[in-house]
Length: 309
Image (tube, rainbow, N blue to C red; front, side):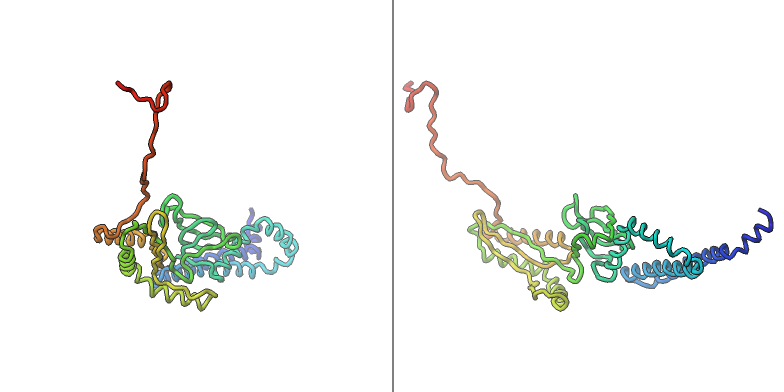
């Protein structure tokens, strides 16, 4: 390339625009990075800090797009038809991506869920740890792990699933769950004492959730068309063929179901042991009431034959 050609290339307006855009992108990236680091040290709330960082990232993308559009606006007019045809093809080919983008808008502005919520999405249960433009990232719960415990797998689900399947939010407007345990008690036990013991254990273990759950449920009643349900712990007795069955129902923090069950079972066993048999746990047993008479004789002998030797 000779000097004249090089000078012509350097003074080409299009090249100047590309260089200007490149410099602009670098400046936007540096400013965005500066604000992310500055705000990360000043905002203590994890959720708010995450949302601010995401907002800065998306704002920087928007500024870059606007800058490119303004710089090359004089060349976009002749490309209108070509862009229209190409856009139709791209829309068809990337329809899943477009639906996922629409899902991101729905998640962000319609309140499907937010970071930190426990949800079931696309058949997967887990805690939301990131919401990007195309995918929601979950820390999976369950599968081969019993209870509401992390399996260790990180699952990324397309945002388009919010339009295809139900979204179960365990911790949205009402961050509590109703849970139950069933205690079988032998017939003949002191059923009044059993109920009293279970109520004492409930008051000790889950009573703290009562007031918190009541206030949250009042918010639900004012926001949605739901009844003013009771959040008080309750004990229901039912009789079956084998034992007396006590169903203990209570509200619990959505992240503490398994630990609360462990505490309840442990305290109930302790209290039953202190009754010294007045209250006893039941289990499946098989009782032979009567053995029928068996008449056995060998082949060739008459029925009723007795050996006289």
